[in-house]
Amino acid sequence: MLPAEPGQDMVVRRCARCGAELQAGFRFCPTCGQAVASAPPGPALSLRWLPFVFAAGAVFWLIELVQFAAVVAAPAGREQLQDSLRQAGLTGDMTTLLVLDAAIVFFIEGTAAALHSAAYFGLKARKPWGWVTAVVVSALWSLVLVGIPVLVVLLRRNTRLAYGIH
Image 1: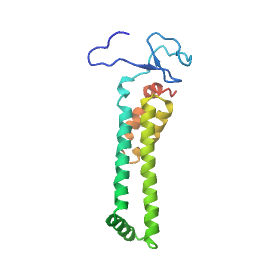
Image 2 (image 1 turned 180 degrees about the vertical axis):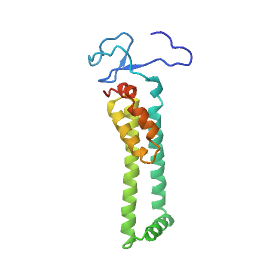
Image 3 (image 1 turned 120 degrees about the vertical axis):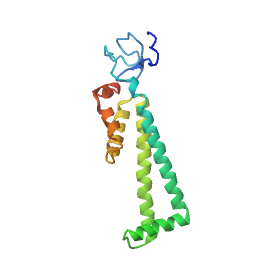
Image 4 (image 1 turned 90 degrees about the horizontal axis):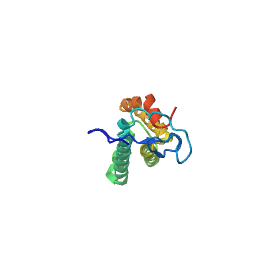
């Protein structure tokens, strides 16, 4: 391989089927035998930041989860949550409502952390399932406008090809 120009990284080509690293000039993947495309998929270098967006999202949701757990664990926090439920017009057994509310929040935040983590590991390994998970997460984030720019990058043809999505 020729050395990269200053300020440019080397393009690492990966097999579209198994993700194995391919050396220059390979016509077939040495791991699975898949025929190698003659041209590397588009902007592989510009996608190196992509997994870290999802890693940051996983960290964000884990912090939110721990913060909510601290509120639920503290007596003053539980009382504040029960007051919020009363102000929302909910009546009935406040302990049951608080447990239900806590279960819903833990489920949502735990699922969000797990999806972000899966997207990170899948994108980092250049696996198609990582791309799919990242699209799902970005689509959900786009409901609050945050995910729209990432979703646009993920849906570009060159990005899909870089992850083996045709």
